[in-house]
Image 1 (tube, helix red, strand yellow):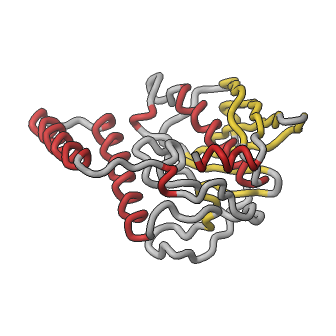
Image 2 (cartoon, one colour):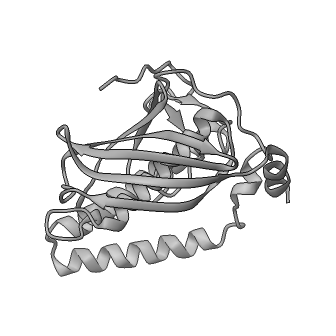
Length: 234
C-alpha cells in the first residue's frame, strides 16, 4: 500500500492535508466545527459501545437537548452559502491527501455521521482508510451493510475530484465477501474502469488485513461543467 504524502497546511494542529477546494469557512470556525463533529462521533460510539449508569445516560440526554436548542437559535446554514459556485480547483497530485467540504456525511471533518476517513490519490486509484466503531455495528462484531455501501459511494466521489468532473451516482452494487469487522483498519480502493458517453463505470474493493471483505461496482452520470455551475449558483 502506498502511503500518502502530506504537506504542512494552514491547519497546523490537525493532520496536514492538501485541500483541493477552498475551505468552507474561515479556519478558526472550520477547525472548531471539525472538533465538534468528532466529539459528536466519539460520543455516539461511546454511548453505543460502553455500559453506563442510568444517571449518566440521563445527563447526556439533558445536556444534548439543551445544546441542540441553543444551536437551533442560530441562523440557518447551507452548503451553497459556503462554496464558490462551480468551483472544483486543480486535480490532486499523485499521493496527495484529499478532503472535501467539511459537512460531507461520510468523509467530512465536521460531519456527525463521518467515518474519520483518510483519502488520497494513488496513481489512477483513490484509496481511503478508516476503522469502523461501535455505532456502525449491524451483526454482532460486524459493520452494518449500509455503512459499507455509504463508504463506497463516498470514496467513489473522490474519483470525480481526481478527474475534476462533476457527476452523480446512477447505480451502486456491492458483493459482501465476508463480514466487515469493527475495530480493524480497513482500506477502500476504487478506480474508473471505463467511460462510455456520460457514464463513468467504477469498481473497487474493501480490505481488512489484506483480505478483501467487499467488492463494489458503480455507474456515475457526468454533468457538463456549465450545467453544474448553474446548479450550484441557483
